[in-house]
Length: 552
Image (cartoon, rainbow, N blue to C red; front, side, top):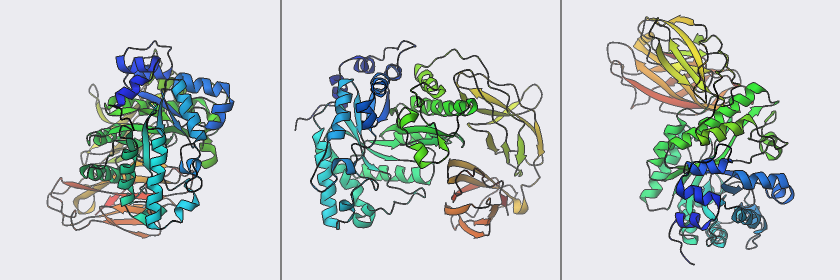
């Protein structure tokens, strides 16, 4: 097959406005669609498209064509759609998406070649030799069909290969072929299209956690072996009722430093329905935070929304009582989240209205060096959305910023033992406006940091509807002599259960959890610290987390 010289050559083959913006970086008019502003920043903005409304609804087609520079087939390129029975291929849905993209100067990201879901039963029942051959043939046929089409520039080669604990998922792929199927899939895709960008894609990887670290290690290892992994996709299905993933931008950057491209592949932000102004504002802030993180990382190619209208969203069927996750409502009206994405890409906006005053913070789990704060959330009506909170220590004319949080809680660390703190909170919006200060909460840290001269403080790193990850739990020697070992106890809310842990040995009695050091992290010099983490399952809709940690 002819080999194109580069991905830029593919982009140049796309005529019209998008290619011109992509290659020139010319600023877009303020009223321009999302794709123009994204291209002016050197990024794409995409949407997953459903073939039903794409063929049958004029308004759906118009928005899809006008606003987005990249499209992904929501289902039409998956295995059950393209090869429902062995050797019988059906490209009708995939072709419809690719042809639409070509007509509208858009790029196509192929999704997805090897996944444990939406793969026909005939594949799952094969023996090892036959399964490996079926996988290679499927990739060859599907990727090869579009190898000479300048619109199709990238593929999700393998999708969701890890559990949240960071172990390889025990799918039929892994059970039959072992880990080698991952490298085999990438090599087959490269052979089918030498110029396509090849990606690994997964969810719950926005923060530095057990799962994202497992993917980081896998990508590093595969690339060292010469396996052609070109990019990492972060699905980024978020929920506005939980805290925004911590360290998202930094996590994107650490993957970029492996030499791969990163991209947001399936963005949506669900809320607990029905909608109201406060939920819309929180959702808009999350959308802005994601776009800002991508803009700040040079290797982040762009952001793809998993759909664009609430009329056709997967969320309500999967998460009862939740929805309204996208940037257009069911009547194709733009929501505050659209404005947040637009203004973040445009880099401007005339919002001068500050958020409302946050509630008075409350302090719990106070140790010699840490305290957990929570407060009632602010709202923002200025259009740019709520961006987060700043937590200050009141000290007269020179108040100290103690920390920042995307949501209405923060665990303070690094506090001074035997010290009184008066703390207040201010909210920030996407335009940089600050709210008035909340009332203060006063607390005093104990001396010595707790029994045995140690203290522990945990931070919730990532949450989803029926679970969460606490990482790091930081254990610090607050005494004047070395520790030979440590024990941390905490209480899980009723109905919560430990599903995994790392860097500590956990035992559970009722809802009380005891974490003990392992052989390699028990010895701590004065002021030294170590960390561990754990993962918890919980009932849907229960947003509680452990209230505090005791170290001995």
